[in-house]
Amino acid sequence: MRYIIIGAGAVGGSIGGRLFQSGHDVVLVARGAHGAALRERGLTLRTPDATLSLAVPVVDGPDALDLRDDDVLILAVKTQDTAAALDAWAPVAQGLPLVCAQNGVANERLALRRFPDVYGMCVWLPSAHLEPGVVIAPCAPLTGMLHIGRYPHGTDTTAARIAAGLETSPFLRAPVGEDVMRWKYAKLLTNLGNAVEALIGRDASVAALHRRARAEGAAVLDAAGIAYAGEAEQAAMRGDLVTVRPVEGAARGGGSTWQSLSRATGSAEADHLNGEIVLLGRLHGVPTPVNDTLRLLLNRAARARQAPGSLAPAALAAAVDAAEQASGLARD
Image 1 (cartoon, rainbow, N blue to C red):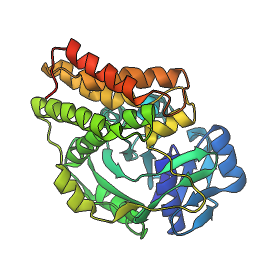
Image 2 (cartoon, helix red, strand yellow; image 1 turned 180 degrees about the horizontal axis):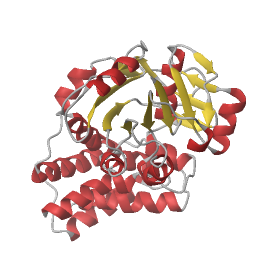
Image 3 (tube, one colour; image 1 turned 90 degrees about the vertical axis):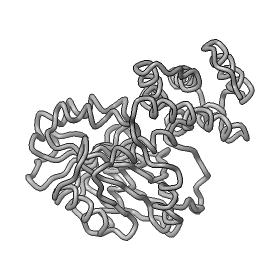
Image 4 (spheres, one colour; image 1 turned 45 degrees about the horizontal axis):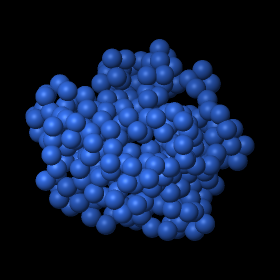
C-alpha cells in the first residue's frame, strides 16, 4: 500500500513523515515554497525526542505521479481547499480509496460526490507548519490518534488495512469504528475554540469563550439529532498517549486556525468549523450568535492578513455579548 498525502502541511506532514520513517511507501503532495523546500532538503520533522530529516518523495499534483492500484489517498488540506483538491484528483484516481484526514465534517460529503470509497478520519494530532519544509509534531508518546471508518458509517477491509498500516508506526494509533463521524462531530466541538485562540491569543478569556461556543454547538447538534462522543469518552480513549511536550528550539504556537493567520494565507477554516454550527442552527431553528460572530470576525482577520492575537480580548467578548443580546439570548 502506498500513501499519497494530499496536503503535506502540519497534519499531512506528520502522518506522512511517521509512515515514511516506519518504512512505508509515501508520496507527499505540496506546492509553492513548501513543496520546493521538501524537494530540495526533504521533510524536517521536529518531535519532542528528535529532529528527523526524511527524504520523502514529493510531487506537486496528480500529473506528476503514476498512480497504482494499491494507492490510498489521504486528503489533508484545509476544508476551504477541498473542492480544488478533489477537482484535481478525482478525474485520475477513480477506484482508489480516499481518506479525509481533516477538521470539520463537510469534507466527506464533498468527496463522496467524486469517489465511491470515502473514509472519515478524526485527527487528534496537534502539530504545526509555519516554515517551508518543516513540520513540528510535539506530542508523545504518540504523535497522533487517528480514528478511521467508512463514510457515512460502517467499516470494511480497506479501512482495516489502512489502519493496520498506520499502526506499524509506533507513533500512530488508528482505531477502526463503525461511527467515525461521531468522533468527528466531537472534534468539531473542540475546534470551535480555534477562532478564539487565533483572534485573541492565549488570553485567560479564551477558555470561557470556547465554553460558550462549545455549549452553543452542543445544543445545535442535540437539536439536529447528531451523535457525538462525550468529553469523558474522548479523554478515556486518549489518556496520556497524545500529550504536548516541549520541542527543542520550537516556540509554542497555536492550532490550525492560528497557523493560518500566522502564515497570512488569506483564508481560514471558520466557515467549516463555527460555520457548520451556524448552518445546522439555521436548519434546526437554534440561534448561534456566538459561533456566527466568531466566524465573521475570523474571516475578516484572515482576509486582512492580520496576525494572530490582533483583537483585544475585551473587544471580542463585547462583540459576542452584543450578538447574543441582539438574538434575544441572555447569558446565565
